[in-house]
View 1: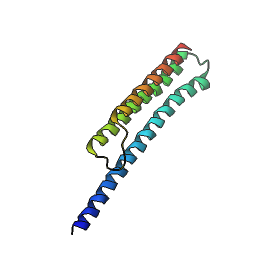
View 2: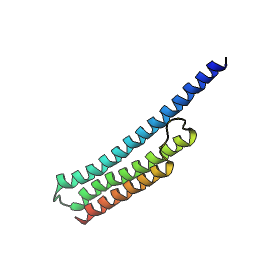
View 3: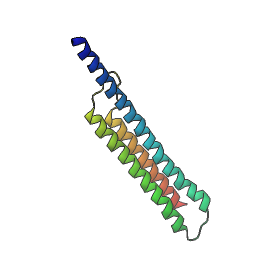
View 4: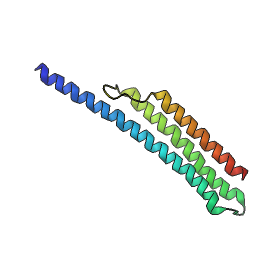
Length: 120
């Protein structure tokens, strides 16, 4: 009987580890989506070039910068909440602070790109 209980515990632990790894992949996917929004903002600058009035093109690009910042924050928030509910067993989860730091750095970079787009 104890053997089947141990097997059941192992299966539960493995499922939790898979969920942790899936959470990290999802976080990475959202970070890529945020970077795609930044790339789209930069691409709009290239496409619109000397669009007149320039503030219209810059405003549209800013929407994508703001969206990217929101995506970065939401990704780390969701990932950290999920990690808070799970216990890593064999898989070693990325620390929540690392996810927060990455999100802040990416958000700062997105805002800097937005500032550059407005300066052009």
